[in-house]
Length: 279
Image (cartoon, rainbow, N blue to C red):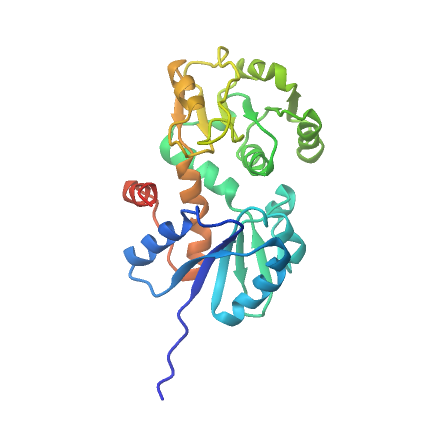
């Protein structure tokens, strides 16, 4: 009887998860690099999440991505949590270690910054304040990443001001909170502007905050990528901003996990974008 090595498995856990483009992305990279392995969507309800996660290594899984609604609960279950995942309060990437421990990280911020660096290579985060719309889980990853690369003043507005105030408490004095009704005022002098809300996403309400104060030459980006060019980006571009869509964040946040699971660091390029957009 021939002893065959186990083919590594990875996947994405969510509820629901059928909409995820991650299987198309990782499947493309596995084919591109001629690697053995599979990446599988796993729809697991919150009540089954911990039991399901702990079972996966026994089934041959080397790691998984985790998406809504499990990203915060993962921190409670993991044996090892990176500093950035702890600061953000959520994790999206799991490595099942050979010693049996569950290692949780958050790569959303890395993906956000890598997307800007790739598509606006002359972007200088220290050139002026950053303005962030929204204070949800994705915003925490974005804010942590912007402060890490040197943004000196970070302005934030959220429908619920108390949630935005929590960012000042958690991230420090560089965070300046604005009322949602005054969110447009954040733009004066801001050189980086980010929409982390779902406003403008397909099926959601429109982004209606006035962008009159947008600085010509500022960098505007949206973490939404359906549609690829949101109303926010269209308006920002009309006011002279450079714009970067949100698809690259999805692509780049996947790089560290794929490298750890399958042993190859993948490249994010135009072909990668085309494959994921057509999924």
